[in-house]
Image (cartoon, rainbow, N blue to C red):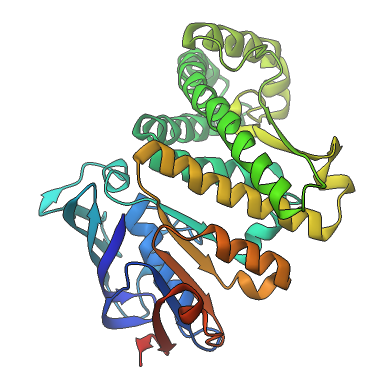
Length: 367
């Protein structure tokens, strides 16, 4: 799986740019705020219709521009695809694959998969649960189209329910509509739990092996998926999960009305990370936390490889500069075999280490 050519028009600070990439390693260097991260962001966007930096399409469009376009030629499953996304300030985006309109973002993930790793991800373990949910969601939305659809529906239902609870004091009749929303939230929430539990099980296996290797065999990494307390077995059938979510919702109904907040559902799910049996978030050193974060990202790459049969694109956004030499060497040794993009402030001869191509970015242009 690889991206051959990328064309940007009006995307962030790129006025007009066409780039041909190396199938192995692409080193992208330049000063800060020149457009290195924007380039990787465009590639991630092509893979899932989501930006790792913003939820708003309009923020991806350059200043004083009314539209932007991202277009790429990719090679996947021994076939060539042309994916194009058009963004507008005043209307919905348009997406197409080989000239055929893509119905939703899931169609993009059938063509291209990416693993994006930035310095903020090194804090993935110490961050709140929302960061680890985003990590799961970004990966699963690429791997499982049904998950992406369920997540989008769950978020819509959650927002509706939150508005109902918030406005119920002034308009108590709104509470009559809650049973319908609650029931559907349980059904869709069960789908999310089904996929998250299985993903975390696979992630735990690969991450444990990666962490053991990176720590020189000294540390055991464990991951535990945490969801709604009434879920005794997250691997249970969809019907059982739905029933258990209904029970949890019923137990919290009065508390939800009183607080006017949605308190029940998988929107609070988390991954607990343990190193040698202790909470990594609370008790581990910064070096251990960084190693664990690296292990999660590399494990995610292996899951994609085993699911789709090809390595996804690995995007390392200024990560190596944040790592000590030992961890740098470990990452570089583990990312061979697929197409890699690495951004840095200076060309540290990474292209020679990984046999690749170098791009110097300045003010939104390759020079």
